[in-house]
Length: 597
Image (cartoon, rainbow, N blue to C red; front, side, top):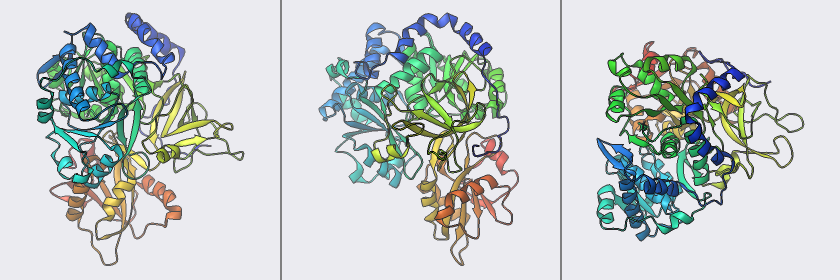
């Protein structure tokens, strides 16, 4: 049997049946013509075909030059206008030596300039290295080392990431937005000749993910895999029309924005409205101001919107479809009803995963279906697949939780990470027969029937919080830097009403040491992104040796903050107060986004 997990409140074991598919098919009827254009892209895509993100965008700009493409801060650029700016930016990059196979580092908050630089980069056959602007110090230095970028384009607003980056990690050519615009003035605005010749197998993006160990890893995304999202999620599931506008409040370094949202917009020839940052209180005002008919989400975003007081704007918008991942089953119906959402296009995927599931049939409480080969198998407590006496994996029964693994083949290749050794760590070989290969997603799911799954949980040494993967080893290194801490174990725990898992650290102190909650918090705020900060600290007498360390982590995770015996527990109140003794109202404050402050 599989490793048992506690059932999460509201977790649905619903099955997907023929009636669900028929109902969804009827709803698709008005979009059948557009779907027919994209269906071949799911089954007939070739890595050798001369089709890329850049050529898709350039063709739309040539065909519909006056159609709105991007809105930001009240300004709109048409497809034609945006394409000309993109081409001038591409000329600037090319002058600095950027060509096929090179990397352009992009350190930017959300803006139209950010998106246009991304498009300029991929038009040249280079990879857009999407830096997370929450990183700083050693973490941003590590990311820059992985990118080995020829040029860095930086947003002046990303001050901390830039100023804490060591000078030797910066490439020879660095341009901020103003310098880029000045350099682009007067440059040719024709499409780069190379764009029309690039094969789909060309790498498009380097997207940072925590993976399962240590510092961030850069996962590759080829144009071919992006085109699968473009056709499958965008063309067949989201199904935007030219009159639609999709609002994007998530950071552009996030796959929901860069791959899913941009793909859906280009698949429909629609408009993308970029929000500078997500704000729960201003969200619907921004949606209305941008005349949005769709938006992208992660589960936390939806929960924060539900937590807001009811307002007339809850129903004064024109949104009919939303796309994203992490919509919790227990809020699905409430969210759709309160805000009048007709379709929830939930999907499941990962930056490094070679397939994706999408709720194309508008079935409630599912991450959708995938026609590509996958298995859901038995697993061990540490998240690794369990092998039987013959050394093979065993599938779980439908409805049982199991580890999702995706077959790797010529039809479904794996882009992997920039580090081949890290990629190989996630590959399962000889899983069911000699010579086969599968990618370990690290996620726990349930099969619901007709190739549909429901997401259950994340396994292994990372957990998701605020829509980001948190690597426990990175957090452990930061906590261990405190002089009072002798040993530390970090893990993710459930907090009622929250999506994902909040960080918790079990610490044993050096002999005679006393924990200073404010001092430790100051250190962690300086060393870690906000989403990686552990919200709970548990002071334990000792942490077992590494031979049983993973098993001990499982026990600690299951005990959470409530079943800790006599161990003192601290909570992160905020920057001003640091860590303070646990108080009963704290979990509810976290769920309501009132803590930490």
